[in-house]
Length: 287
Image (cartoon, rainbow, N blue to C red):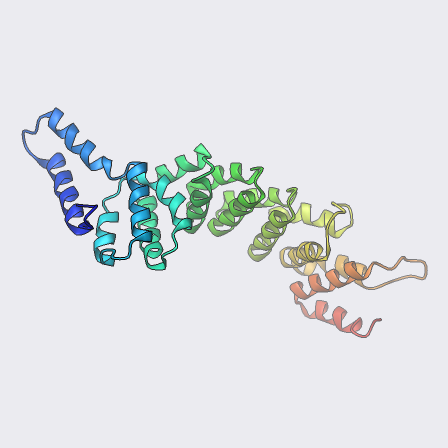
């Protein structure tokens, strides 16, 4: 029936077979096992792959309603193949339907998604990471923390962004650690998230860079992220520190670099208090 495009009929057969296996009185165990095996066949990787390819390439594909009805019959074991195929789909309508099915399946069977994160299969891991973030799955925090240390920089960044989406206390702890990551994109993503949430647990690491004691291999954009995070997190109590970096005081005091002074001004802007605005106004014409 699938080869003939009879998706609605196929879904109906699977649904009735499942009902029979679960509720039929007096059904022998051997017969029940055969019915369950029949239902599970649709979710086997080879069959799911063939289904995705046929949907993506087919010119006379069934209606969206028929496709959606069949996809709802997929079991948790299909999740790995689905997340592998989703980025490859070229048909926008099919991709929308598959993404909805993936989200529904992962929401109902979160344990399977966590298993994919732990397994670390290179084919399904990127999709599993993105899905964990989209679902804001707090139970995935530890698994995403492991992925943050992945040798693939793109995967490490994706795990960081997923933790940002989740935003739970455990996720913020891992993002605080990410400030010291070797990858600049990971560090900046973590800084922006912690800044937006005013997470004080990150203040010690941020203060080191603001004070000039942290890592030296940072460019202007990353330094800016540190200073803006400092201003957002520390608030008015950080006014003196930033003012000291921005305003040259004393005849023999070495003037800070233009980058540091600009970043200090941006940090004051994030504080936003009347006193911070007054300091900015005082140096507005400073050349």
